[in-house]
Image 1: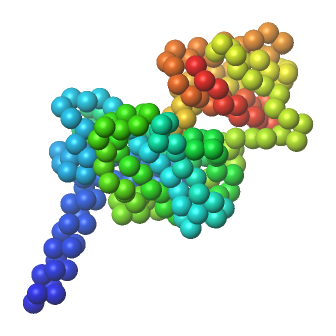
Image 2: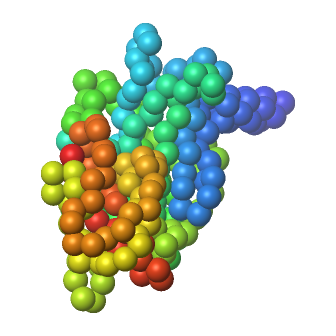
Length: 228
């Protein structure tokens, strides 16, 4: 009877954690975190009406197919959890196709299978005065995913053809381009078409931070990291 009671309590505890925090693979390489929808903040207490807190993310060598550790520098955690009034919860996105892990500025190669992620909630991007314990994504519903080649940071044999200076894209590509700007978390900021004719292209990014811009020219694409 004692063992059955312990099992029942363990199942109830797992269900409570699942409701409190969910980590879902919503598309290839894209992971969504939802926290606090049940008004339970026992994993991490963000504070009264705090609109944003941060997520320190890593993947251990045994948890991805490259056999390499990928992790954020504690002083530069680029994934954020933002209050979403429609969800009644904090919501964040980790796009493993484009995320730069800031400890070494490494990005998963295309075709990498990620079986688990570790993460910590904390109150500051560049450190913490309070934080959660270490959390494992698989505990909260994460299922393995493989990074998508079409959004991976490219390193063409011919070398990088584009760069961003002062919020403007300078590229040697010519003709009609499709341009998409992403936050480092993978969130799409804006997407538009432009004609490349040798003059710089204004990206119109208003907020300071680290970004990726994907430049597509027909069947070729390039992804460039830049800071605003």
